[in-house]
Length: 253
Image 1 (cartoon, rainbow, N blue to C red):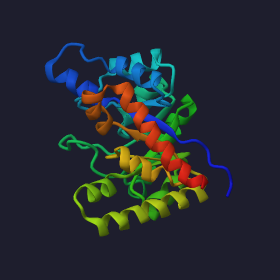
Image 2 (tube, helix red, strand yellow):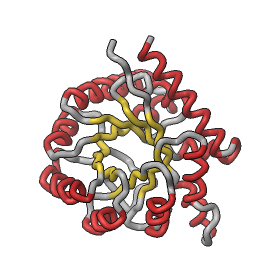
Image 3 (cartoon, rainbow, N blue to C red):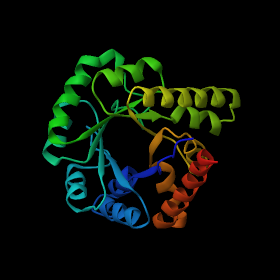
């Protein structure tokens, strides 16, 4: 078997901002959380600037870009306002996600196949700014093929349906969904796409999915920030890295 590259961990800090915004003021500071995560071994920081600014704010994005020592991945809707902010800020990466004001969290993958012309235009706008564009999609053949056609170099596979099925004890559904993820990752790699994954992942699911050799990066937020309340963010990042390393080791076996 060909050598397998190490897998990267991106830590999503949105919900540090959620706690801050619940009371107002500046505490806890997402930038401080990002610095702690990086010191503990995170390879990058993810932050979703939503249109309603429910957690991450414009100033957070600006400070993260200016001060952190690892890549910033800005999650964003495919809207003109967000494209302009990204071009002005120039994060390392921009992950295009679907967004609805009434949703609690991102509920599904981006419909690239149904919005191909619009998504292609967003990709074309971001690329000249040196921004690596990824598309957050379900592991569906049509969406993966559309992602390759619109010119995005990276996809992030939405793992939420798989994680939900596992949590709810729906074993047959979980097995089917993981088979879709496995097939989707393999197809994406054949099409020349870099493959990331995220949504709903915890220690156990991160370990499992890290065994897929095509997955180059996991982006994880809610579970890690929740565990950090009890164990501290640095400890949680270290424990997550260990889980991912265990999964990756199974690829090399």
